[in-house]
Image (cartoon, rainbow, N blue to C red; front, side, top):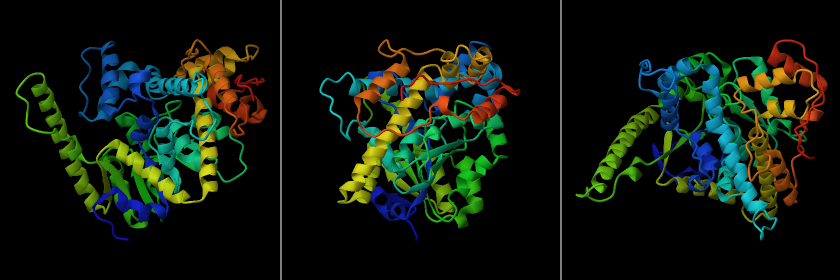
Length: 457
């Protein structure tokens, strides 16, 4: 099928209906976060994250060594070298994962427990999360370039059981991913894979130039493109970073069908009307105009790269237009079949439940911290806590409504009578499996004990 180089949203139906490999990026992380003005959290973009880390690094060394370029990975490389691995990774985990977990729990508690008129129905999941869930309607496999797993749960799980596979530089950190809530769901059907070639903030993540170069030698880098073998490729919520993935697309373009990259129309960023004559409106207008010119230049470069590779760009004016489009995708799939809509709602709740359980464990201090806290008699408790800190865990609970996060999660779950996913409790993980994971973490045999998250089942 021959697609237009630049398409309107409604022109993507045929490709979407045929099925696709889905790539998702930071836009989905930003979409799952609740209103920042209400909850005080905004998922940071590349620019904000880099500036925050540079400020943190300057507290240790000022001035900072000059980066090789002004690209984000090179600037982050400087921060990593100045701060060291543990502080750098702890900051990433806190910003991209821990704080996101906290605000999602707060929002769920406000909607379900604190609202006197709350009634159990399929509509208790926030609308923006329903929109994200629609992305996975015809997608398999799914490749997430995010370093948090929550958006993956929401995209993949509403259509069935899911397994998350993150990149990690060593085996024990891949084993660590087994403890993710989605990965502990009991299998009674095919599990849709979600690959994280950039890893997860709970283990290894790809952020610096050196990390990017090393990752290019790993299967994870090639997997993103190879997952689209023989099918269509849809890209949503991912920036215009052609330099990173386009060399691989170039190499394998003939083996992929249609490619559609959803992108914001730079013209939507153009300031309206003539330049004001008074201040501060004049300065604000000029800043907005510079931002528009920069976005337009980046888009023109990206558009040329796409044209050379026969990659079509689907333009949207506002971010809300993008998500409304994907809701229409799901509505078209359901048609008049109410059983499909009912099944989707049930699975969406299961996805949301997995997300909230994962969030509660992280807000409680992190999964290794939880294991050590609920098992004070365990022989290696102190060493487990040390390993938790090395992986960036906070190590102590963040109280929400003056309650421990796991207790709060239990209240939320008890208020809703919808079907819940059957998840293996940490205490039920086979001793030999638990032993192998801890042996990998510590590099030596360990004494296993009973483990529990403290979550009521």
